[in-house]
Length: 214
Image (cartoon, rainbow, N blue to C red; front, side, top):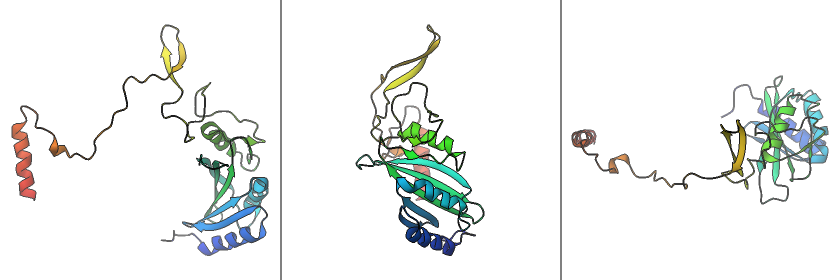
């Protein structure tokens, strides 16, 4: 189903233009009425400038920059830029890959709001952005170890945080589970439970209701 106001022909023309005329574009295709462009890191900035300034694109806003982790790959991270052109009512997604050491060029000078998203991607995935002057953690606590959205990050984390009333400060301690993880059976229907003592009449009433329905 085509969204109202989305010019699919316009997006198709942009896909052909970027895939055939712009250096560093690996692929450009339409996915669910959005243009998805996969690019090489070395040409990311030039392509982003083109997307912002080209009169047929005019991506004036970066709505989000996020990461995707594929631990089995040599370049394990996808860095995904979601751009919006209000003028043309189109969305363009740009994807670049990188590893744990190689930084991705920052785009904060093109879109100042990108600083927030780049800090978030660094905090949660460990992706670094060259040229970003404020690359600090933004969602995790001070002194946090690791990057919690990596798929090899343990579910329990490495440390736990609590307030110590005697020391009157936040303390970090090794994780200690107060109980084992439990498995829940979500397939058994409630009707399979034994009737609680004193609930016999209510149980019989439910059975009578079922007979009337079915």
